[in-house]
Length: 304
Image 1 (cartoon, rainbow, N blue to C red):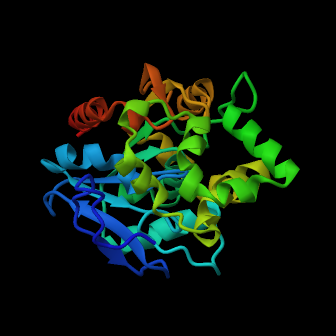
Image 2 (cartoon, rainbow, N blue to C red; image 1 turned 90 degrees about the vertical axis):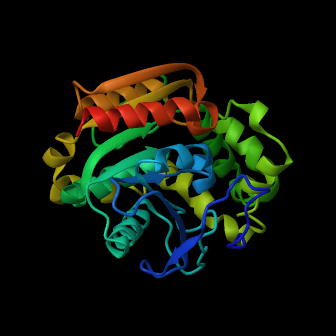
Image 3 (cartoon, one colour; image 1 turned 180 degrees about the vertical axis):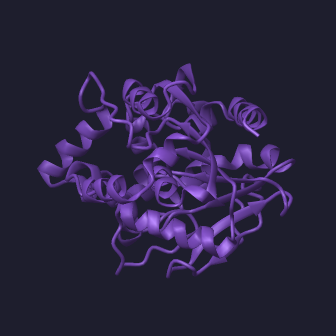
């Protein structure tokens, strides 16, 4: 676990906060006016809140920006006796939001942040005001990719069947850049020693990697499906569909195929805005942070 005070040479200058609401020590940042509209930024695999580092400052000039690290990621604890599934991450988020007493939330989500946000919203529609998706799916729009499995999930399948997946993802402290490139990391100009240190630091040993190992296995083995079906049956999908929403999709995403992201989004929000961005990969917060800040600000302004 990264020391609470670590700033990675000033690239992560935000005050650390911690909560035990979900039964583990969870880190988050909470920047901007306490009475401002809440933006909740959710990261995915294999990153942490650092993904949003270039967006937190500009957005917090007007909004309250809350960025948690999921269990097993970033500065949050990686308990060894917990289950790492879509359901557990959603339930953790519910406890987190309740502890901070957040409401009228604009959720900004990427990668696994999307399915987490989708289930959270269907289960707690009164807490969510808007949904801003970036290279992700919520998972309730029936979307599919014409090309089948993406390079990322082909790689997962290959190494899981060969028995080598745990060994590779269990060494993220040294392989995180290579793994992110497989998923679709594009902005290699951003990579320096500090960048490598920041994304590697959450994973000093194999035990610290269990969250990152289990995210893709949740898909590979379909472990997430019973929870999705349960949410469809018991959650409020109609309320989810009623939310103002926007999708930004980079065409160099090797983790979630752009046609899958767009078709799933259109299944829920047929008339909502979709922005397709050329040359942008899965980690669009690394590629076009300034543009995303403007998209989010305009989206909130246009959907009061």
